[in-house]
Length: 402
Image (cartoon, rainbow, N blue to C red; front, side, top):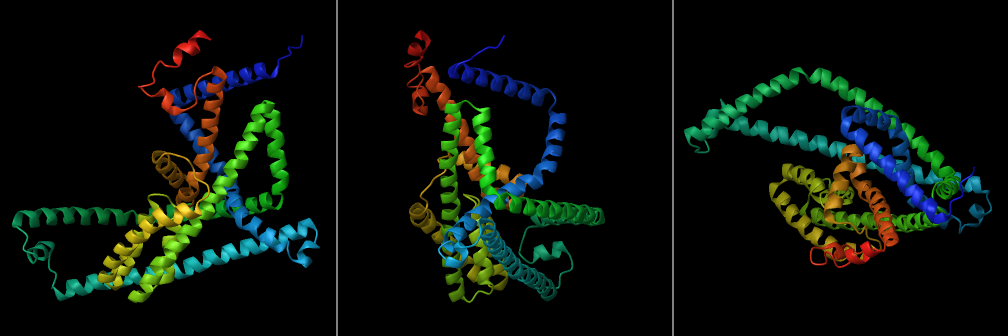
């Protein structure tokens, strides 16, 4: 006997199945946490190239779409077949991105090596000029009391012993690091080729995703999800391009000031600040710290001026630049933004910290829409303020009566 269900009954059945599935998954996580964690790590290890490839494809698609739109204005490009047009635009986009990455590291690494060398030389010169015999005599020159001097000496002695033990284990650690670096490189290469495949046939994958959405979800919900995904895509693109433009302006402002101060390596410092400033809240200071240290090695006075400049530039960026160029906002509380940065950073490093917020915004918006959809079905208000302590009980009676 075939059971026929209308759309409303289908929706209710879908939600019940989802609830049962989530309940089983939660029970499994609580009572089999170690096994679940191990299984999740294995799944993430297998899927990490695919995830990285998907994230890379999404990010590269922004300049790719811009390039295709502008190249299409040229007659010779417009007369080519679709496949040739896509291959040309894709090749140009990746060549430019790879060149910019290479340029960044070719500027950063020599500057970093030079700064470390200068710092080491400064420490050696200081210790040589002051005839360093022991930590205790070193601290006495600063007029510290014997008690404080003894405490610091004991602490540094323990630190020295710890470093000796650490250095004895450095060989195996370097081997493990090299192994991890090889694994990361392989993951990156696979992800790179995955992004090429995704971008070369992005319209095809978009059609499959849309078809699957209609197949899995009820029609009204599928239409709602597709609408939400399109709005989210526009908001995320606006967020990323706006953040990049605002960060570039900040990096340029600081670089100009450093140029007039006579600081060496301003291009490198500007690029570091531009990239780090794309990470909300924490990013500006994550980038400013190494820049401060590298400038301090050259001239501590300029380093202190840099701190003042970066604070002023941050105020200009946060209150003037970003509000004007950001047409789309994530619409999340600061707590969730920091949460997304921490999770994204722990999974995918610096890249994860940058794209963690927009990815989490997608999940946040979908969950928010789902909750509001269920509340609407139950005849309950969707506004969060309606559930405050002051409004408690105002709408519950009407809901119970139904």
